[in-house]
Amino acid sequence: MIPGFDVSKYQRGLDMAAAAEAGMQFVFVRASTGIEVDPVCAEHLRGAEGRMLRGTYHSLQPGDPVAQARIYYRALIESNGFLIELPPVVGVEKPGTTEEMVHTFLDAFSWLWGRRPLIYTSRTKWHGLVGVDAAWARQYGLWVAHWNVPEPVLPSPWTEWIFWQHTVGWVPFWPRRIDLDWCTEETWASF
Image (cartoon, rainbow, N blue to C red; front, side):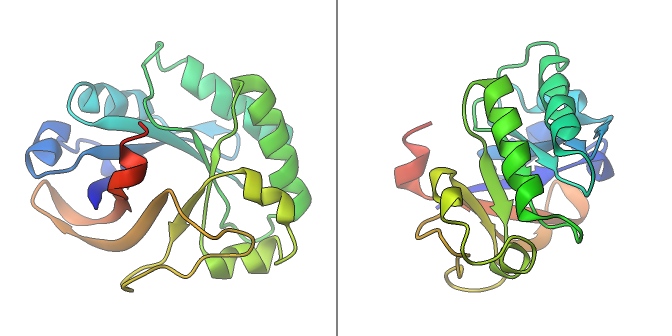
């Protein structure tokens, strides 16, 4: 498995060089949440440049999904043209999120960006917010959250994952716990 982690403004000042030296090979940086741009996004992306592969995510909140897709798109464009090597991601986990909101966000963002993002979620969150009958979601790759298990349990309709947030833990490059992720070697080869 290929190790990585994800960050937001709450990890301001994290030393990406130290993370790479500790063996991290990728990082997902929160670009936006709701209709706000994460103020540390560009700093994190710059710090990881040339050290590990970079991706970004948007934390979908209850509210206008089209406005949120535009904010995420603008956050990526305003990151001064940083090359983002990994697919963009939308996080689906906030109470009040609906299937219609998720679908609308994905359609709007895919149109703006020119390709489909991944979906970050857990089985419990997805089934509780979107349901078990969202077959349309199969066309989007999955970054699954399922901590401290030997193998993640996937939400319906997925049968495989691209990234797996497998735990929150301690690392030598950050003084507090941080979300840790895996990517399979087979998938990694496609990046």
